[in-house]
Length: 424
Image (tube, rainbow, N blue to C red; front, side, top):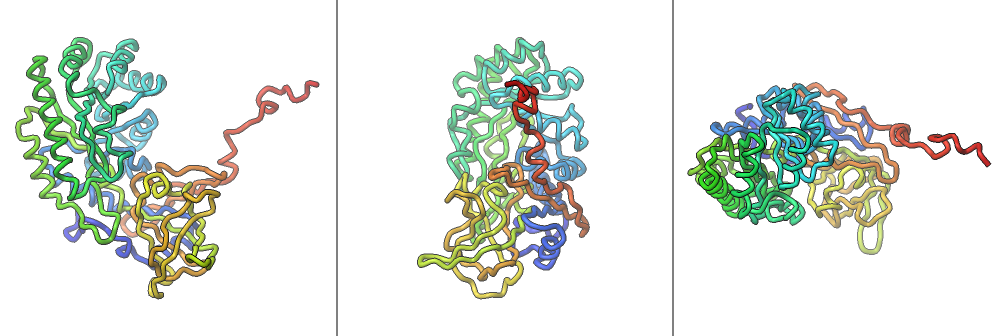
């Protein structure tokens, strides 16, 4: 990690000339990923928790370039689905170091994890329902497992990510000791796991640490009641970065002290799973203005990115900074920026002061690294964008732009599939 690595990278900190050049070279919409920043963020986090086991939560960004960079930096990987396991291994992860945290896992996911565990006994499977343990046992699995608990406390930037109080996630706290005793008879029960929310900033820290302390208490009570000894207690991730320009970043030294205080009585290794913190400010989106429309109530700026490119504003009402990188010196004017999708949800901002965009200008949308490309889609049959990675000042296409042929390649008609079209 460089000595001058700031705790947060603002959109204005990106090299505006470089961004314009990348847009002209590779087209738009375009994801621009800074792998050096990914490495800096991970190393800063790991340095704040030198005694903890730090795993990267792959669901934030599963790009192979990101995973390979973090593996090279010494991170282990936590996966939430079969595809993430596959991608982590393809990026170079040793399957014995992976943790698979299943939420209502489909049969093919469990099949894959069980087969992987048979060949790689270091794999850990985390389950948050008695039924999932039954399904594992039915498949003949008897390896390493952890119990995901529901502490009844949720934190984070939006109710849809406050997983710690959502019944979908984990086994209720009062049931955990009995479940642990049952599970230990059939599996190698090595840990307790919980994830209470996402996007935690300074104002959320009290609730977040209260939830972590609750998880630590559950682990201690379970170990004592069931006569068990846990290898680790995993309190998940959730540590956020400020998306708004006027919000201060987390002081990791303070965060680390608070987490250590909340887990002081743990008789097990502490595990943490940062995701957003590692990748959010390491990526931005470049998009070109195609339409500027004056209306009686606002100036509407149309761009070629959309909710198919970045769905977080539509899904979570999320704020993402936006900057005109073609003419950043123009006078700011309140504008609404939206894409080409036929829904009012396809809006990145409303009446926000931005250096007045003109047709052909390039706008940058910041903090797109976490759950940006991961949630990209093909609404309106839009091909997903390319992704360019910057490392040591070199730019490389790490994900090519999809074509319309890519969008349609998996389709067929009943006539194509069965040949019945020739029948009367």
